[in-house]
Length: 206
Image (cartoon, rainbow, N blue to C red; front, side, top):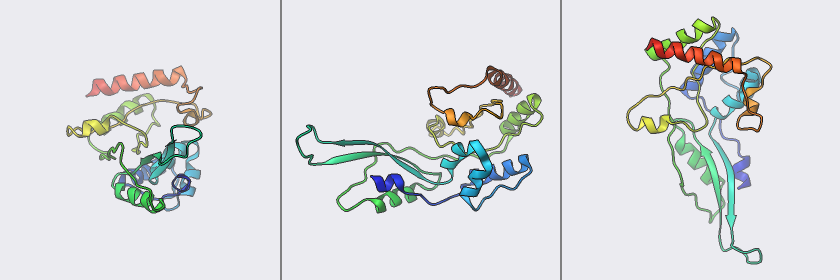
């Protein structure tokens, strides 16, 4: 279990992450590294916490279970692993985990999702950009991969292509990514008001 949790999976750039690097480089007027993940994350600053999990497969042991009584040696034990693979890298994740397991340990799927990518182009993307720039002339939509769960996985089975669009204007001193799912997670009301105006423009333009 520790071997899986401590394993560093290979660096991989999906098309969406490549597009993200290119778009952010253009927006900031600087060249982001597409070859060195450590350098790339250092260049990204606080948002590295969000982007880091999209540069490789990940696997985190989250649950352990064995035995039924404190003075009885368990006959078997199990560990739950939260494994997340990049689009197109499911086989690599399974193979890597299996190679880390000792003889006698069996890897089984409990929940198996899908990893999605969608092209960052078309009228919908153009409408997002126009809505943002109407409120922030320097605002630039960029594509990125979400490492968490998304309803897009379910909608994709119906042939629906989904895009996450969550406009939010945050002050530079707020380390928002460090607050995710924390007891003090928050955003300024001005940021929400900005997002509401952008979403209103976006929906009305469709």
